[in-house]
Image (cartoon, rainbow, N blue to C red; front, side, top):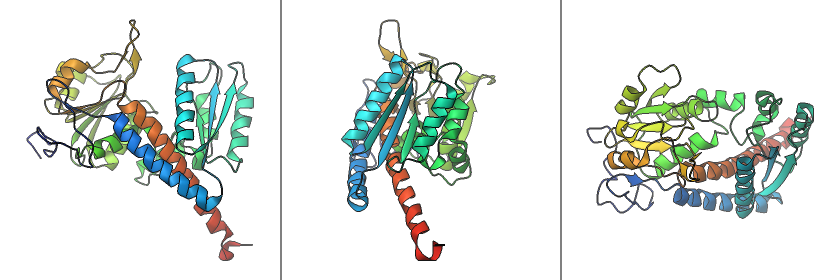
Length: 323
């Protein structure tokens, strides 16, 4: 470990990361954390696991994706998720509902998917239209099929250090750090943003990895000071350039979850990339960083869910458990 507390093995002149991923430096400084490359590795692993599951069970794992309304960004996300699942050999079931759908009808569909033996994972694309309580809908998903990792039961298990199905974006950050050999135990980590989707579960994932964690939110008094002290920063605010690059501690690892479209139509993150990249030791690009990892971990969760459900069925069918 260097003076910053960060690992020294991926320094200048190294050709590959901890698990063989190629190291590419941004002009002027940081190693680029290539989410596309690592996601491709995860998806290849998923394809192999899917093939083994299909060979043993006579069917592939199944993922149901529910989209409500015509939000353009949601349509793109759903299309990408369905395409990725098909490429990995996962059976996909798309359910597209109009924005006018009642909450009762949406809950009924969730109930049907909970009982569909072909479906191992259920993903409800957010946001949902006004008038539909997202919490009630997400809570209605069978926790064993909650491949987004949003259900209170799965969040609670993560908090108790018994992770089952883990939130995809935070899980993707952890996997990306592992692939690049970024040591997490003891590291001073700061998460900017406290949403239930990213910020809070990200803090739990980092705690599970034995990092020392600070979570910044609207009540934080000295955001600049908290970021400047951090050896690892996860930005999950959804505001372009919310964290100036000058705040990044030299040598820090920066994971930018934000995906924001500018007036010029380009995609940027929550961190001022150009300045941050000259100061950081590692940094994710936007796009091409955390986004691909989120989809990859969704696929991994789907196979995990399929295997866990099959194990449970086998246990229930064992002679000692028959009524």
